[in-house]
Amino acid sequence: MGVDDPSRPSVGATLKARREERGETFRDVENATKIRTRYLAALEDDDIELLPAEVYALGFLRSYARHLGLDAESLVRTWRARLAEQAAEPGSLTTSAPPPPTFEAPPVPVVRERSRRTSVRPPRPGGVAAAAVVLILILVAIVYGLHHHTPVAPAAASSETHVSHHSKRHHHRAAASSGPALATTVDTPSQLTMTIKNATPSLTLAFNGNCWVEVWVNGVTSNPYGHTYTSGQTFSVSGSQSVEVRLGNPGVVAATVNGKTLGPISQGTVRNLLIETTP
Image (cartoon, rainbow, N blue to C red; front, side, top):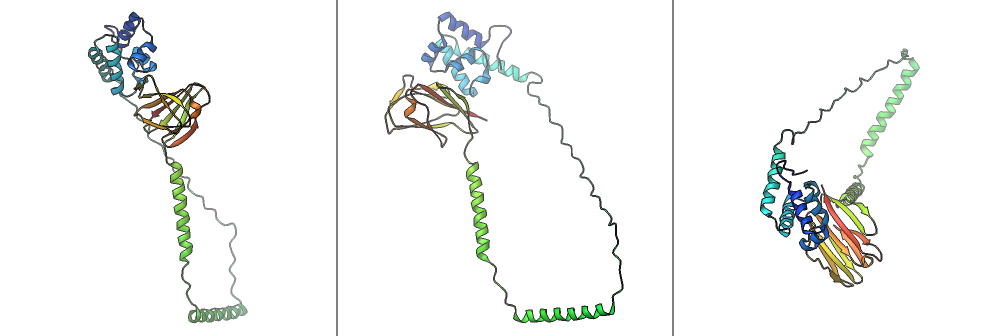
């Protein structure tokens, strides 16, 4: 989403012109402001969609403008005004409702008539006598059963076993579905990027050797020169939008993301690990 103003250069164009006038690269600005290069480029391109939440985007804009010696608050007001104008444009927030679902009536079952009719024959005299004898025997058996039958208690243990098995199956399904979903989007020797759905990124590192670590939370680093951890130490960090670490000896680091263990990051080379949240 751009923030271009037809009457004067956009906020991004103003930032880019001043940076080039000062002869600075994105890396120079990142070292000075602790703002990641990709966010600096997004500001110069007036692309709010590549930035984190608005509060962070405005913070990045203020820091960048102050570093370049520009009027930070004026640029922030221009940015906000242009976003408000675009939000008020006709059709900017309209969405077409999906058509209502159509339902078809179920087919009417067809009842087929039997092709043959059972012939009814009058009972024979011998058959009636035999039926009477059978009926008398049945009545005798019923009376005998009523006097000698002892009711059997229900198998409570069987019911309890069924309930127990049902509870175990329910618990297993609940345990299998718990926990946020992790997906790998970039996997190269120098970069491992993962997304976590509907959860705040939380990262824990466990060290079994010396490793230099630099950390970014929501795109901003608080230790630009890094810190060296030794065997047996652990380190945890979380962020509302993203968490990233640069590891100087990733082969001695085991990472855990929101309770899910990733194991050693890699062997023998510097590698970045980035965890970003997605809706």
